[in-house]
Image (tube, rainbow, N blue to C red):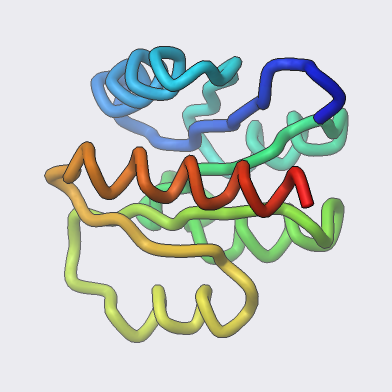
Length: 126
């Protein structure tokens, strides 16, 4: 990360969630870019430079799991945290088995998000 601010891409179709995570992650010292769907997230990931991704499972058009898979094809080292407000355990477990860093549930536990950010960024520095 070479002294630059770590960058996060937040992918959620709900503006209130994107804005909430933008505020929270910015307060944690991250530069945040937001996308409202998987297609936009994939397009943004092609430019590179993201240290972590927060991807909602339920997205219009392309679901979060497929978005995650395509981002991992572009950036094999992508640190991805999947998010959901729904009971989709098997699907999210599949994402973790394919390399997603973790899962967070809505409504969010702010402490859990901060913990994941710290853990990911420490590992990225290694």
